[in-house]
Amino acid sequence: MGEFRVLIADDSAMIRKALCELLLAHQEKWQVCGEACDGQDTLQKVGELIVLLLDLSIPVLRGTEVAKKLKISAPLLRIILMSEQESAVMELMAKQLQLRHAIPNSRLMQDLVPPLTEVCREMERERNVAGRANIPLEH
Image 1 (tube, rainbow, N blue to C red):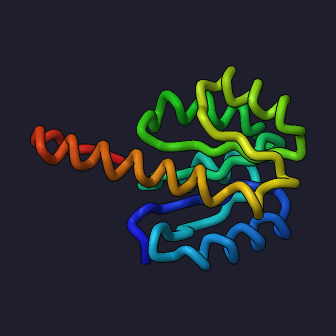
Image 2 (cartoon, rainbow, N blue to C red; image 1 turned 90 degrees about the vertical axis):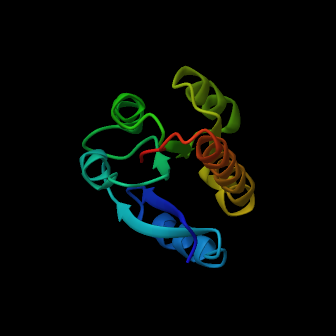
Image 3 (tube, one colour; image 1 turned 45 degrees about the vertical axis):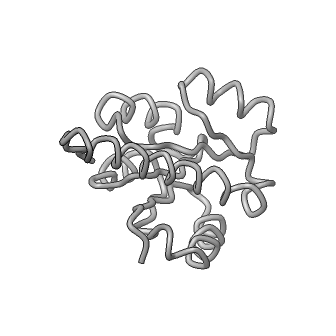
């Protein structure tokens, strides 16, 4: 199993299942450690995560609110936004939330692996730098 722990937060069971299957095909890089169906569930399950795949329109607590809370409470967590919105809207939302990756649901299966791989490489670089400087990275 990969060392990068991923939580999939989406109210659609079909999307969660499809993403789990996609990520399992790459399990040497990352591990799907859970699923959440709403914002409150997401906040409770974050724990020791490294990457959160976050749907903007999840119920109870919207994805934007979840992202804002996690930027404060878990600043090292990497968040990749997902939504039924089109690319331009997603890019604007990501910019407003100070996130680098946003993918429309219509492109998830084609476009998710590269940004997820990039996030994992960033984390590896940060770990290497922290290790050389003897700085513990906490997640």
